[in-house]
Every structure is written in C-alpha cells, then in structure tokens.
Length: 441
Image 1 (cartoon, rainbow, N blue to C red):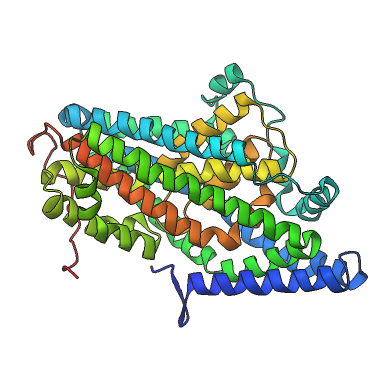
Image 2 (image 1 turned 60 degrees about the vertical axis):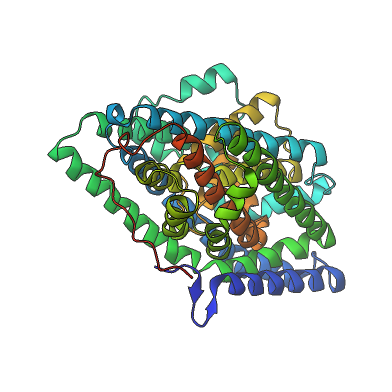
C-alpha cells in the first residue's frame, strides 16, 4: 500500500498543510486572545486535544506487534548462520559499529547545541498536564531512573507477556532477537511455517500502520494547534533548532563517516562510490522508504559498484530492515531534544541507555515512511520523557524522514561495499529472493 498518497494530494503535502494550518491557527490564538481564554481551553480540552491523542494511542497500540515481527523476520532472513560465514559476521559487526557512530554523533550534537533549551518550565508543565491523559497508561510504566547494572538485568524478561502488557519495550525486543536467532538455528519445515506466520503478522501490522498514518494530517493540525496556542513563537524557534541539529548530524555522518569507511575499509574512492549510487539516493529521498528503494539499490550495487551479486543481495535485503543508521541517529536526537524541551535532565548513564536502545531500535524499525515514530515514543517512555511530547515533531517529521531514509539506504550500500571486499559470490547461500528491479530511468 502506498502511504504517500491520500486522495489526489500526496500524504506529505497533506501533513505539511495540517502543520501550517495548526501552527498558524495556534499562533493566531496565542497572539490575539491568549491561551487562558475560556473557549480556547474548551476547544483544546474537548476537540483538538483528544483528536491528537487518538492518533498517538493508535501508534502505541501497534508498537509491540510491529517491533516483534520486524525484529524476528529481520534476523531470520539472515538464513543459515554457518553458511553465511564471514559475510554474516562482518555485516553484523559493521551494522553495530556504524550505527553506534551515528547515534554518538547525534547525541554529541544535541548536547553541544541544546536545541530544546529555553522553554518556560511553567508552559512546558502546562503542556504535560494537557496531554497527560492520552498517554497515562504508558507514562505510568516509565522507569523513574536508570542504573546501568539494573538496565542489563532488565534486558531479560522473566515473562515476555507481562513485559509486553506493561509496555516494557526493550525486554520484548531482546526476546524477539533471541527468537529470530532460534528460528535461524532450528531450521525445519515447521520453523519455516512459523516464520511465514510471523511475516504475516508483520504485514498485517504494517497495513494497520499505513491506515493510522493516513490520519496524520488531521492529528498534526490538532496537535500543532494545541502546542502553538500554548507556546507561541517559542515553539517555532525550538522546532527550527531541532531540525537544524538533526540535519547537521546526518550531513556529518553522510559526508564524513561514510567516505572514511568506504575508502578505508571498502578500498573504493568515495567520489566513485557516491557517483554510482545517485539513483538510489534520489529514490530514497523522494519516497522516504528503504523498502521502496531496495530494487534500485540492488541494481546500483550490481551494475554501478560492480559488487558480487549474492553479497549485495544479502547485505541490502537485510540492511533494509536491520541497518538503519539514519533512523538510529534521528531517534537519539529526538529523544534528547524532547528531554531538553521538557526539562528532563538525562544522566550520562541514561544517555548511554538511549544510545543502546536506538541501535537496537534501528534493527526493528520498519523501512516505510514514519516507521520510526512508534520506536521514538517507546524510547521516550523508557527514559522518563513524556510520551505525548512526540506530537511536537510530527509536523517536521516528513522532511527528516526523507533525510534519514537517504542516510539509511546509503549506509546499506556502504555496508555492501565493505563486506564485498575480498569476498566471492559463493559465500552467501543462493536461496535469498532477488527483488525485481524496475527498468532504468
């Protein structure tokens, strides 16, 4: 299903219209009649507030099945771990290392420039009270503090169903990773059928996510009206600073980290590399979908970069789900920005936790437009940042989604280039499906 269309206008244009209408209306109310006026309080409490919270609740509802199925399928698609040999090991190690660098760049940028600082604490608290009811159950399960030792202990759920019912997302993700590894190791007809069932759960959840995302223009208009009516111009300044920091971090990763990796580990000229992957970068930016860019990326890897077909097929297919550098960076920047915005002081330990969860969350993020929003919402809960704060960034998410998807797809091609060095076509098993590439432009 194409999530970029709704009626005759593309969905991202409708989201932009919703953002402008909500922001403009909220600023007008803030500057003319004030946020304390009776009818404004009634509208924000009974119409725009609940409408925006319904959208957020629908996202929260789909988080567990989405992340569980995406993680299990992503790991299981690696196939026979022994047969994959060096290619599988290098792919896994590079994914963790490069994603760690991406998140670290984002976290450093947010701590240096602090785009969320400067908001009146009284107004921020008022916003929390206004949206608290919509996320009361989720926020109620947020940890009060995070200690590193207890964090690693809590990674292992004593009961995965209890963890899921309490919205303890990280233990569920760890269970999903182990479950996926188990599917790979216990290969049989029965496990193949089980994998197909989990793939079916993923497809159903994605269909529902696509339906929910169609409500985004209305939800954005309502949420932005509430936020702008309460914060006025302060909100606009903070959002501009947030976008600037996020895009700046992505540019550093794209044009500093990737060229160093391609040249140092892949043995290829960065100029040649970026010249060869222009097509998939353009498709990624325009569609904001790693999955939609996969056929074009496969063609570029085989015919432009001249990589071994089986290596490229394995790395890019798995990478479309599991190697989400841009998404991991975006999630880290967003969580820390919202923590600063609401005056939540995250310790170094908590920021390390955010970094680890973002790396893990990048594996389970769907490669579709807005696929990372549910993950961001749950990371906010984990570190005690108000989950309803995600409404702040919805209006500018489409542009950031296009940027981070381009970073994701480029990162997959970087990974394929490095893994292909010194390898042959015989390393990766020949039973992975080859997506059909579209004809050249």
